[in-house]
Image 1 (cartoon, rainbow, N blue to C red):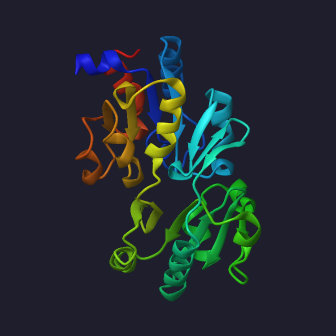
Image 2 (image 1 turned 60 degrees about the vertical axis):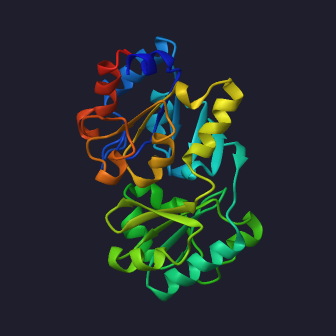
Image 3 (image 1 turned 90 degrees about the vertical axis):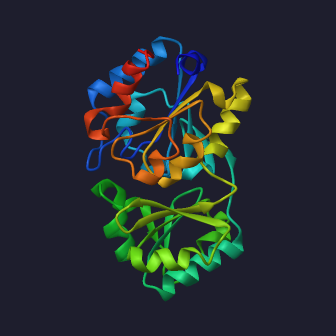
Length: 270
């Protein structure tokens, strides 16, 4: 492990339930200070989230550099201002297949387009399950009736669905090219097997002349597995599901207990 720590140059963190506990809109000062100490010690920091850029808490931009951000599970790499550096839209075929399944099974469906999150099925169910902060309600567009947003914005870059897990799990196997990654109770990120958070991180590694051996990765959910298992040191938070921990080298304390900060201390990063 000591040899691996010596190789680390880039720290990559998921947001929800990794850096940010459920129900919170800002990082703890302990975690903010720890991340800044790591950067002062010469480590680079990258945030890689399933969130759309518009859903990243404003406090993150106050507390962290956030020069390059992986969003929408790696399908969209943006700079601090939200300008797209690289994007990977899903196919129209996959978009239509997801829409048809969600309509047929009463599943709340929100597509993450380049410009906004837009619902194509069961707006109310999606909003109640996905949106926590009142400020975010106005950020979601309801296009359940027409389902035409893709005609002007292009096909979506990602998907989040809200519905009964006992219903979603069986039909998830009918789309083998897509990963249905459990994110929260009755909530799943849906993304291509070929475009994951690791995709966005790879672009940064290439630009910086680094390799996966140089990465220390933190995550908690199924959509974090692709970069946790590739990283030189992959860390699952203590609140992660067992399926995520199986792919990690280490398990940190709970997110709500500043698990990332404590692991940085444990590894001697700070």
